[in-house]
Image 1 (cartoon, rainbow, N blue to C red):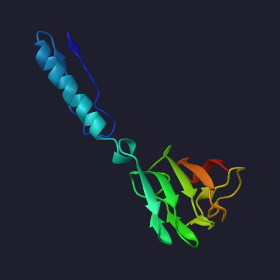
Image 2 (image 1 turned 135 degrees about the vertical axis):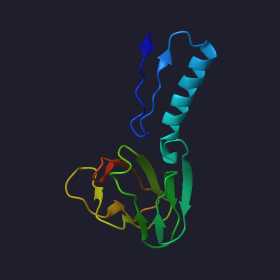
Image 3 (image 1 turned 90 degrees about the vertical axis):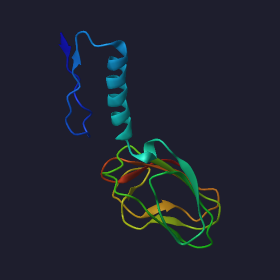
Image 4 (image 1 turned 120 degrees about the vertical axis):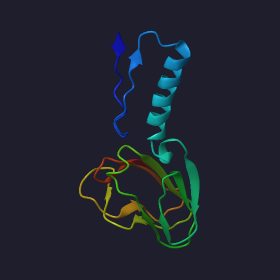
Length: 144
């Protein structure tokens, strides 16, 4: 009797057949290798999240940013990664200064819906928004 396990979708095809008469340690070793390869295929952003302080007028959102705290006197412009690459990813953005936060491109959908624009946060200290990629744009899902 042979059990065929398919490879994870992002890996090259491999043969993970389990043969009758295999020792339990051999089965566990094969299973562990498959699991390890599958988990290794996930981007780092799904495993490590950080709080990133922004003190400059521009900032490029990186793969490990989960929270961005803007502390810059003046308009802050954030450059987001492609929404199509990070579908489902959420980022919390907060400003601690009374200054506007915008996106470098018109890829932000307002909380009430509508057309994509650059606006993220109004120029009021304590404003925050959670944006989430829908695969096309970054949707504001919650804000104050």
